[in-house]
Image (tube, rainbow, N blue to C red; front, side, top):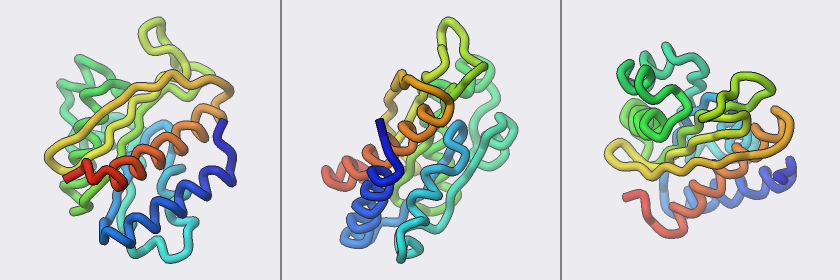
Length: 167
């Protein structure tokens, strides 16, 4: 399980890679409530790689700020592969960032369904034109799910920078 110190280490590694590659990041967060942006901005000098983050907890905010389609929300729900793809692409388009992450999930304790139980979290990493998504099923209390989601978001960004797989 992710700890505050492991998240700090991930964020520091991420900022170093961004600085080395001259990459600016963005975040589009729902269930993490800005946790990824906080982890990044806790790193001294992070303004060199992070300018804009979006906390779009409500579907209306996802639509208004990130351009998520009402049809996608109606057909697939906010916690879906389709929606996180639209979130990350919209965040990168609006902010001009080269790389971003989007997170939407069910942190609990309520809100789960048989198809999307508590702990279901969708992630997308990418840019304004392409993205890769993955679903995780996380365990624990609300705070555990959110903390683990932040760590996974950071790890995914690091992986893409190390592989240069976001161009």
